[in-house]
Image (cartoon, rainbow, N blue to C red; front, top):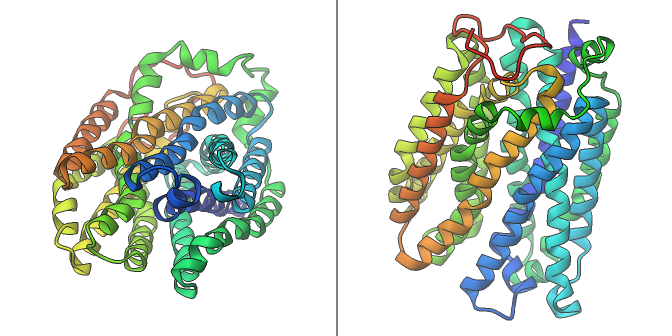
Length: 436
């Protein structure tokens, strides 16, 4: 049916948007209000570090979610795990919105906050792989890169939704009301979005490529073990996402506290700039995927990685001007770089693994890259800023992340020639293989 692949890809886009909304409202709240609400007994810098550390817990939980949901996704199907991931994320987010603060229940508040953030990480750890694979494995041969890029669009759209909701709530309330209860509104609204996402996902068909694996009795007993036995694939696959995840979380989380600490631009303006940046990011991803389908996935990803690495220093130079145009240019160019690097990323990473272990391999690799990049980046950036008072050292750190992703992109063996990037990989292809 010609419309089925399109419907699956759009459902993946909507579902990932909802999950990333849930994930990133936490990051915004951590940067803006969690320090005084859950860590009031320490200094402002220590409170910010503590709040960002709870943010990082969600990334640490991702490999766990990727391993567990990847195992069952490779054994019983992609669709069921997508439903489970959305439920887990939705319940965790709703409970954060209802969580009493330190003033109400003392030390139990930050403990429960960490636990619920871990639950969020479990949910998103199984989300990305499932949504990307379902879109990729339903797609016609000539559209695999494009259709698998649509779940990647869910990340910036989730940022847009999270930032807009926080911006509206922040502008509607004074500082006292926002700190007292207004920050909970975005978390509580997620319940409505999750119900909508569940309705969509329950109507999807299982991946036809997985069905062929199951029909041919090729389901692996321990798919993750097979992945771990091939480090020449897993290690570079994990490094692909280090730069984009790291710099994206510097932009989306740390920069909010950076501009506030240096009194450069106001929080509402920074949230508005984040929305514009994420919209550019979302719009360029499909264009990068089309480009990659014509020129090859790896060359396009390399362009994005090199551009982001070179942009590390101009990014903070422009933000340090304290002007809205300078900050806007810094963020928008970074967003466009994210898009170029991540447009072909889903297809490139997923097809590094054969169908029988693809959910486990791609989910764990993606999650490990996010831990090494996104989990640590806001914390490292905060420590470097506290030590130096400028963004120069943070830019150097981003360059290091860029070199890691550059080496990983060159090292991962693509199963496709550049002239035919959208050819499906045989289900029984070996995990470690030579380039076609």
